Amino acid sequence: MTRRELLKLSPLLLLGGFAVPTLRDRLLDAGVAWSDTASAAVFRRDHGAPVFADTDVVPFERFPYNGYDVLEPAIDFDDWALTVGGAVTLAGRYSLDQIRALPKVTQNTRHVCVEGWDAIGRFGGSRLADFLDLVGANPHARFITVTCADDYYESLDMATARQPQSLLCYEMYDRPLDRGHGAPLRLQLPTKLGYKQAKYLTTITVTDVLPARRSYWGDQGYSWYGGL
Amino acid sequence: MTTIDTHPGPAFEHPWAVRFCHWSNAVAMTILTLSGLRIFSAFPSFGSKIPQHDLIEAVPQAVTLGGWLGGALQWHFTFMWIFGIGGGLYLISQLASGHYRTVVFARRDISGVWPMARHYFLFGPKPAATGQYNPLQKLAYTSALLLGTLSLLTGVVMYKPAQLSTLGAVFGGYHGARLVHFLAMCGLLAFIPGHLMMVALHGWDNFTSMLTGWKRRPEYEPQRSER
Image 1 (tube, rainbow over the protein chains, first blue to last red):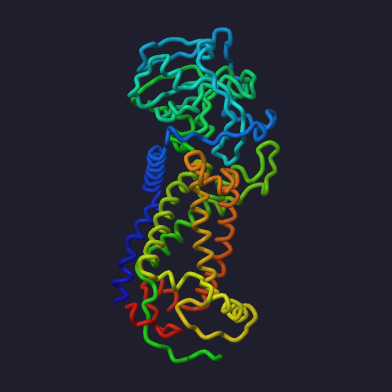
Image 2: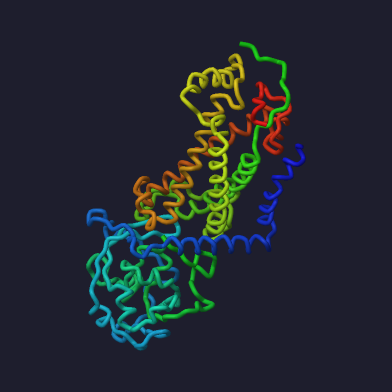
């Protein structure tokens, strides 16, 4: 009787798999992948991230600079353009003025870092969704990938890319984006962690297949989805 | 009152779901605590980033898991599911079986807390056992259940502060949830030394009952109807 009751606990031994090094890495990868799948499933494009009053915004000097390498990578601002490719009808180079010509959105949203700190900032830019329409992105494409002047790279699910608060950001605190925050153009995504919000953008590609190098931090072990 | 020294027959104390969830949650909570402390090390503060006032220079590596922030997050994001499923299964089984009545601290237990605390801490007389758990145990277990629920809710809010902004507002958003999440962990950690000491004091028969379900020599008259 007691032995049978004890045997009923045997499924718990499966947790021992986490003690086996080769198995552990695969189990943890599966755990993060499953969390990403669940995160994408609960994402609601029409449910915006919280927006805040001007009085809740942290002063500009107290909004952290966070870079993975250098804060001022070499960029030729006079010749800068965003190179668009992949599943779009109008591939090519897009100037900052062309991006600025799209309807402008200004929003006070919370920037959440994977490290655990957060800061409410004021951001301005064009909706990524509007830009994707401008370049004729395939409406059924699944992802966008971006590369940056500092060799950073990222990718996004299309649901997040088309969420109305997802910006091609060129302003912070009503002034042009400064160099440390990603001038001339960065992603500003209130529904993603900070490391998904790539700075110093140089290219955007619309695609159905993620490349091997899909996310600078994601490739090193952070969640690829990184959704809030 | 004196303790009745005539031990009644064996009692089946812990149904399968209780034992299974007890051990899966023990593993999950250990891993969540260790990896959580490594995650906390990345920003050991509840204030702003600028200026940053750290509460501690660094959490000792020995009580952390994952090696680096990314590794710790992998453990945390994997075992949050195991903890959530174990906790959910426990609550459902307790509610469905009615077994929760033996655990949940109720109004009638209030008067029994002080005599029991006096027995444990001040060597007062031992109150007669009337059920599977005494009032002080019920208070401790009920608090732990609430703290576990709180840590899960605040964890989910921190994980999805945008999607769950309505629930998040209850805890003061991402920032508040992070603080409550940490305090809930502290509360659960405070529960463990007392719990382990009681297990040690009550001996092998009590310990194995959480493995097999059966206690050979309960201190109270078992309810035959339960099994």
